[in-house]
Amino acid sequence: MSGGLVGPALLRVLQQFMAETAARWVLRGTVESLRLSMDTVSAADLPRIIEALEPATRHFVDPSLRPRMMAQLRAQLAPSAGPEGTATSPSAEVRATTYLVRTEADASHARLAARMLCEALGGRGYECQKVATAVSELARNQISYAGGGTIQLAPQLAPKRLLRVSAEDSGQGIPDLERVLSGTYKSKTGMGLGLLGVKQLADRFDVRTGPKGTQVDFELWL
Image (cartoon, rainbow, N blue to C red; front, side):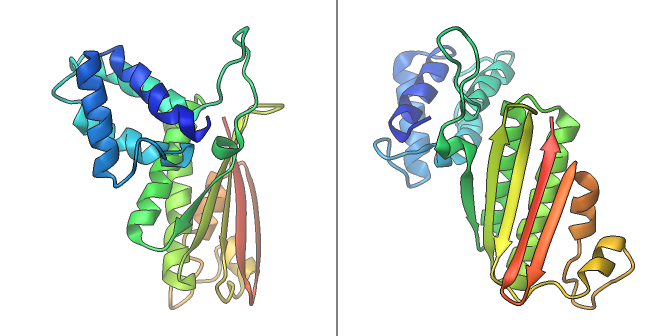
């Protein structure tokens, strides 16, 4: 979904559940509360906007309809459908969105984005919890031991439906990586803690580390 389509797409969903005037007011107020602009919001902003819309719409939408509304809002993270209802390739913004991780708030944002994208792709509850937990572990390790890094989320529909996550940092690397991944090594500082857990959660896992940084790639098959 291109940046110029984000606002109208969300507005169309909201208008199914509330009056047009209320929908416009709620959407604009929500976007501006996040210090964004309706004219410049992009697909990368969707997770934050959708999260904020849940409480913002509470007094405007019947409680029995709210789950359906939120499902439709989260579906905006998924690839769009072609003219005959067949899935098209995701846009570059959605297929490979990268999140900068420097603070705990950034880690929470990346975790939420991963969970919502998993749900939009049709992942089951436990699958989306797995990917959210893994992203959270990686992001917090980046903050604690490398001064931060990036988390990239990339969904794939064919030939296998999956969510691919890549976490990169420019830290000093993870010593004794093989022992960390085997569960036989415990650092006094906690470096590498959680990496074994991420490996156990993933359907495919790979890590490369050295004095110039670490890259962790994993996939969750949906």
